[in-house]
Image (tube, rainbow, N blue to C red; front, top):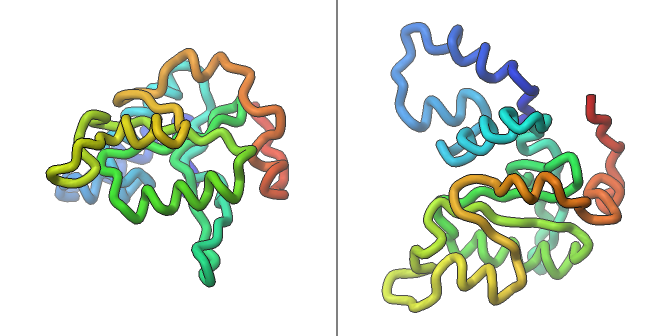
Length: 168
């Protein structure tokens, strides 16, 4: 599901005629599964970034199972952004597998509520979990400073053997 700059907003106006505006309808209609993803798409667009939503698939292996992961956003500098409202156990496991199998990728999280506990009764928060595994994170919106960083020396497309994306 790709989102091109500007087109998702124009499509939104036409598509809503006579449609119930539930959160599920809003997100899935334009490729976003959450308001947090849409908020960050708007932020990137406002910063002059090309909105590349779930534009690549990162292969990873759960022992005996081959899977792919579609990051929420890829910045022009090659930093990968995953937005999370809720960080489920399966998501934590997936990201640790990806980190082990693709250490050259720069994947960062934007948490809606970073100080929520990973499970009820736990002392560990989403932020503490990310810190423990050396994963940079932010609250609610991608920091503008991340857009200005040089990013990884090897871009995600090169790491994954995908065609290079041109930014226009």
